[in-house]
Image (cartoon, rainbow over all chains, first blue to last red; front, side, top):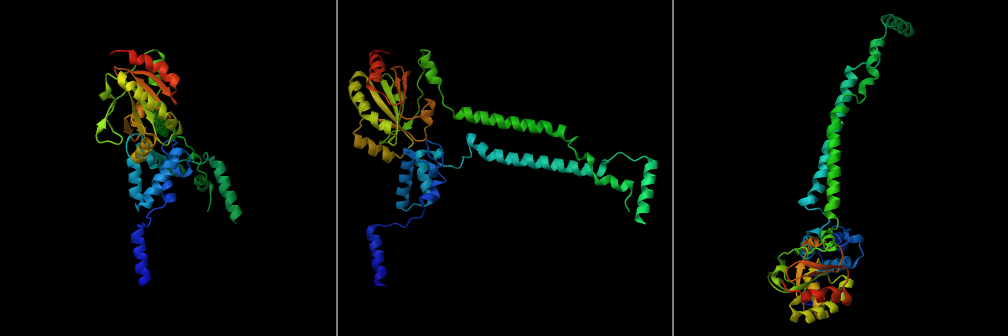
Length: 144
Length: 200
């Protein structure tokens, strides 16, 4: 009990804060604002400054969302890797959905056409009645 | 039992795309054209704007873009428009940019030199936490004022693509010279000195 109280006292006195986020967890969701690449693969001076900023906020005990909000406050919304739902960035959300819808419609149309063709349209030209009779006879003889 | 008629449906020769193609041709073409247009817009919209450089090359002075921006290390906002009637050395910088750091002493000396002649250096600090910028200014003992272009929106109006970049603004608020890269004493002497002699 004394040990626990002692530890709590040390923590309180040193102001140690339990981290609520990690640098690798945030780095891949943030951009290097100058190089326009993900922060976890950027090595420019501004990328180093962004990392130092994130480490500082982690040390202050901020969670991931709070750190991302602080990054936006410092560097602007372009610092986030996720495209914004406005302006040209909106196309990053709309275009994939449209492509999926268009592809789905195309596949559906093709499938319907394929099925209709399979039922309605003749595979080969009709046999001559004489040939058909001969074929029927041959097949009947073969079954015997 | 199989017979000639029974064989008919086994090989659906009519499953070719005949009849489907004309119906899909226009939607597919339109979708492809829309995607290409979107791509072209994305490339041109994010490319470097060289309008100001082209105007200067033709000997024209274009009115400098203005915007209300937060003052760095002070409350409220400020704008280039507040300095009309003065010659302004508008310098776009950031503390994480090594060439920006290198040219700061020259810019500070220039600010001190031209203040009495109706001129000033106005910094535009870009894309960094305010505390980092202020720490840097304090360390380098920089006294000229700066505005904060947090997300580079203002810099884009000047076609800023790298740091540092400097724009000389005449007393009528028009861009008289552009330096895309660090300034030198020689460049300032060549462009700034005659500008200070001009009257509105």
